[in-house]
Amino acid sequence: MSELDVLHIPTAFDPFTEANEQNSGAGTKDYVHIRVQQRNGRKRLTTVQGLKKEFSYTKIIKDLKKEFCCNGTVVQDPELGKVIQLQGDQRKNVSTFIVQAGIVKKENIKIHGF
Image 1 (cartoon, rainbow, N blue to C red):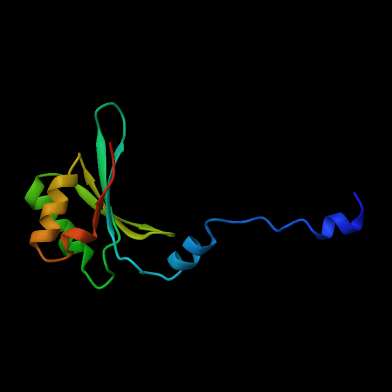
Image 2 (cartoon, helix red, strand yellow):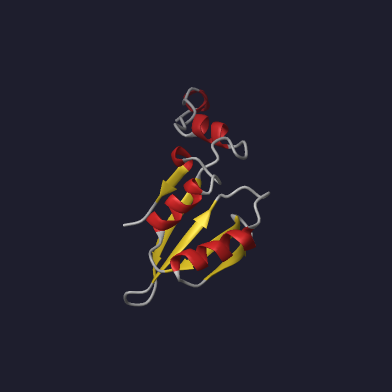
């Protein structure tokens, strides 16, 4: 190939550039993500991520633990911020609880898992 042929090669098209630019702003869509993770055997762990920083995580976790009779904690993640962890598969319970408490609207909740 000559140098002339190399100059006319089109640049690679990246279909995700527009999506990445839209999602680059922090908090464009404030979703609360509720996930379940498989641990050992039948053990599961429910995580809640994306709550606003002005909420008191300690009060929320205290109420969740009392309501669902399970143990839980708040973990500080470097990328995700504060994440609530609960024992067991509590996805449906947590979603109804935070909607009824007025913390998040139902359309801003994403439930992940199997």
